[in-house]
Image (cartoon, rainbow, N blue to C red; front, side):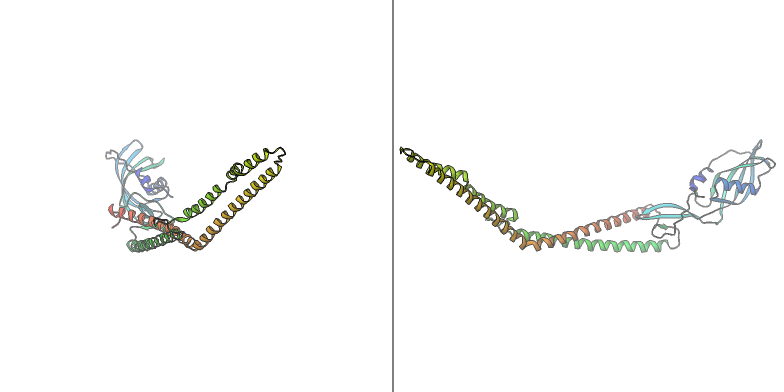
Length: 334
């Protein structure tokens, strides 16, 4: 039977007025049977003595005293400490507990009785639930067990060691961050310095090379060459030819086409050569500092794993400290 004892017993905590009367009480067997039914077998009525209070028709009221016992050990939750649930054993299986209550009995010896217990007061707390896995030491701490404080001290020692581990991890994290920053400096400085003494960086070096190539491209632009050729070579030669009555301009046009085509081939050949030279030089520089990048990548991976582990450990430690401090502040534990 697994109901919350506080909920069950609360049904009994009512009050009633009474006047002395003399009547025949229900039998012990009837009282025990109907009590067990009322509490669904979780709490048993072991013994009871009755004192009559009043009667009205076939209904009577009695003051009751005696012993109760629980069918199972019962536990009430008093708090949490990180992943541990702290519980208090409120009832011990089979152990007698003194009680006082009121009983209403409806019926007679011949017709049978219907009884109800209320205004219950017990020597044990009116709270608790059975816990099938209460012996799982990774989940529960029973605060009124004899070994509770010994277990608590061992767990706290583990969390104190965890805090030391956190400090060691923090130191290692700082060292990794410094090593990564040092590699950043080496990588940046490996590309050289500008006129002001500042590191150039990969992009700046590559951009400078590209600007030189673009300048050569602008100077050798085929359209620019073509315009100049027309102005300084082809058009003057054509004008001179046209002054002759037998002018044949075809050789001039052929020479023009050859010159423009040759210049265009040279332009693209030179552009391609410079572009390949830039790629080769950048690749050579990249290969030179590749070990630095690889080392930095390894350190970043270590740092990421360490940061994740440290965050999880720190979260667990903080949660324990906050919970255990609150439990002591509330007086749940010493």
